[in-house]
Image 1: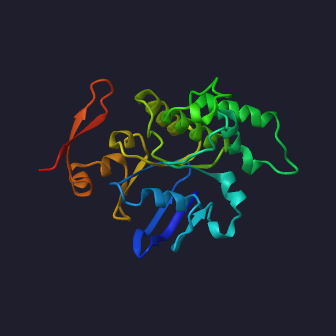
Image 2: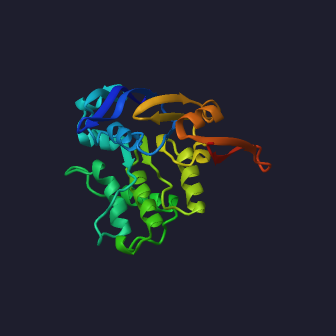
Image 3: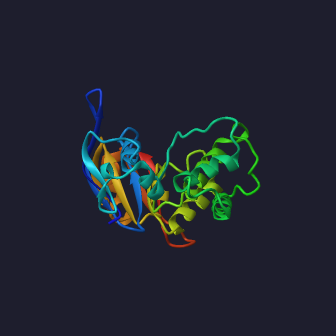
Length: 254
């Protein structure tokens, strides 16, 4: 058990956004987080990352309450890529990715060749080799998303939290990022809208109206009945002749 929460809740202006969620994420697991818009996925991820303090309940990292850990200690173990993250306009791609090394630097431990190698590897992993000197304001939405993911990879976390990581990406980079995350030796919690992409996860967690509706394997969770109840759609399951994997097609519920 590397990451867990108990009775986690957060509300604002009298409205409960996340309500009484208890969940355990196993080390090395790739956990998909799905749910309709407004179900609390982004808020939940921010609390797991220690960025947003819960109104109720606790988050535990390696068995320790996050309230007992310094932000630097959390940042050395957990990286969050937010859905609407931004960066200063004049910063270069290389500078943005180097920010991922900040938790590891101190007066006693300055920048070194190992940091250069880690940043270079992160840029390669997200297919941004050669973008070192490009400025943020010249990048497309998809390129910016890949820079943020590279920054998180440069952080070398034990836990990687991703909020809609394939947002703005073309299909090739969607697939490459998802396959990269699934093969990395990290624990990952990934909020996804594309339910076919969620099939790549070890388990799937379903949020509905801020509450934990269900947790299980893709085969257990991605069923016609549950998808109809949570998303209000009809789901039909096909078999891809190339690899015999399941594919979901959706229709508006009648």
